[in-house]
Amino acid sequence: MTTKVLFVCLGNICRSPTAESVFRKLVADAGLSAQFEIDSAGTGSWHVGEAPDKRAQQACRAHGIDISKHRARRVRAADFESFDLILACDEQNLRDLTDMKPQGATAEIRLLMPFAGNPADRVVPDPYYGGPGDFENTVQRACAACAGLLRQLSAK
Ligand code: 4NP
Image (cartoon, rainbow, N blue to C red; front, side, top):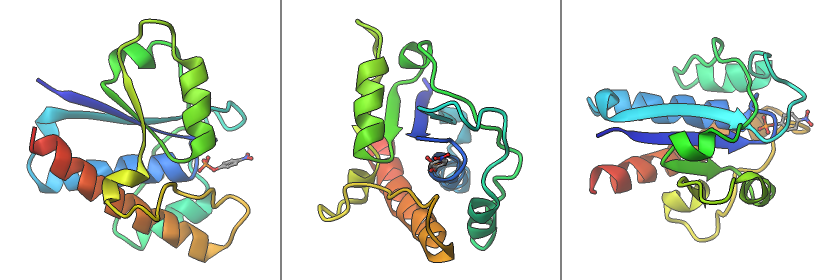
């Protein structure tokens, strides 16, 4: 049995490819790659087909993670059937996903950040109009949330 996890933000060029790659690395380091399918997508379509934002690539590279091969895609209706868990980076992503979810679709839609276990951190803030510190913050939040996520999913 594989668990299929989709990370979602707005553009799929900053936060969700970061979270996807961080989670993939944690899963690989734990020797659990065969048990997971991991992807990311955006609720918006402006950046479809593009590589991740250079600033996100740089912040990930500083943590030994290469996201340069990722290409942005939009969330599609089939995602709500093919993924078990769809994880939103912020509240707007969560609302958009809830609106997009076809009736009767099976995916569970949740905020990502609560998996880190700190009630003060509800979201991964959008770093797009920010500076390098905001992209570093994205990686750090993704690391904290993805570690908690893996703990929860592998305890099942
Ligand atoms: P992301 O960041 O949702 O983390 O990929 C953004 C990327 C692009 C835009 C906004 C946020 N944009 O407005 O184009």
